[in-house]
Image (cartoon, rainbow, N blue to C red):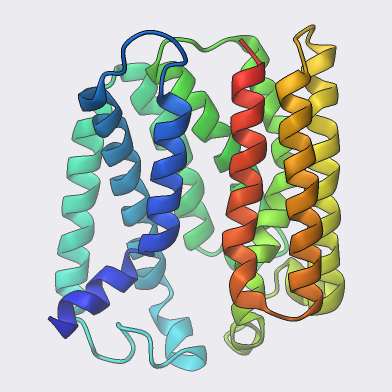
Length: 274
């Protein structure tokens, strides 16, 4: 049972489940009957994609974790590396099969999003460009849901400029908890370039800027920005909370808060743009 628990941890389960839940919320129809089987299909597909990204992260990070985090499951000898690779293969195979069942174009967009995570894991996370996969992955999630639901429009592509604000903020929030250990293994991302204090303030400022920009984008597209403005207000409040928690150096809470901010703004944009 303990071994199963360590395999479970390698899936980065809490982040994976959070992303899957947001995906289901985005995919749920505003009008008409809710097809729970299809929503479950969409949510499970995203969950397996996220699981595969999380597991590949731990597999690729093994030599670095052996230096900075020797207690993690693989370098600590708590799991079998070959078994972890086999599990990864199963997750990818089942996830791709479910993704293909949602349509060819949806599958290609899904691969784009999954590719962002893989590129991050392959080493971009250790550079000053570690924010870029986050900046591309978040808008791609919105695009994927629209393609799956056959409601994609050119307007949804405006999520990508907003992602350029959210991406660095999400990346900083993700890297802050283990910044010192990561530096030992050779990482040199935004947190290390800016320093912990400046980086956490930068993240809060970028979250606020994204929240302020989102209703403006919606208005410029000629849409009613009422819901976008309400989402932005919640996003700004959460960004202020993020800053307070960051200044108190409670880093463990920053990533959940960052996910909540991203989800709030993403859902607000999704619902405001036809």
